[in-house]
Image 1 (spheres, rainbow, N blue to C red):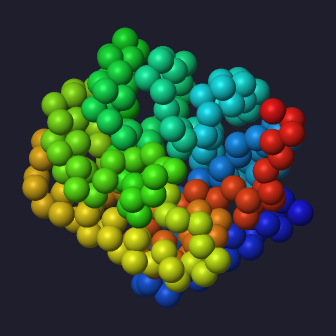
Image 2 (image 1 turned 180 degrees about the vertical axis):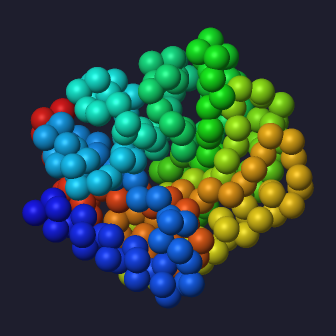
Length: 231
């Protein structure tokens, strides 16, 4: 079942790329594996996926040594400053930087490990009170503040669009964040290279790709519904 799910997602990605005249290589599929057991991750890994996303630090730490070392782990959930140290040497990118203080802590921990951490700025694109992220209005200021930290590199923006029945309803938000990325990039801020857009999830990733997503985060579409009862 998982392999068929993955094939269905892959077909939808390819179709969305074709509709928007983009190369398939322009879009990275991140398999969101939160709450899923190692066996399921391994099955998807064996089917060719190398990018996995987790919402919780503990899950990355628990799974990291039990799976192949060539997996690229993405931290996509809200990250507390006191937990940065546990994943700084395990993840390839942190998608959820929503404050200068968090960016500062990532910078401190990255220095300790003599690495430079790619990060995305998380934007609360729809202004939802239940979601993390900076507002569109504050995004440029955060980019400017973070640009002075020398052990992180801002590579783009991330957003979680509203949950909707019709993915077309989120097209406007994807267009807004793409334009925000263009506006920030035009400022030519040192250490800021806004080329990655981590937008689109199981319900709307095809529309997100049509609007410029370079990363889509698909969990339920690959693994099925999440089971929190085991946590």
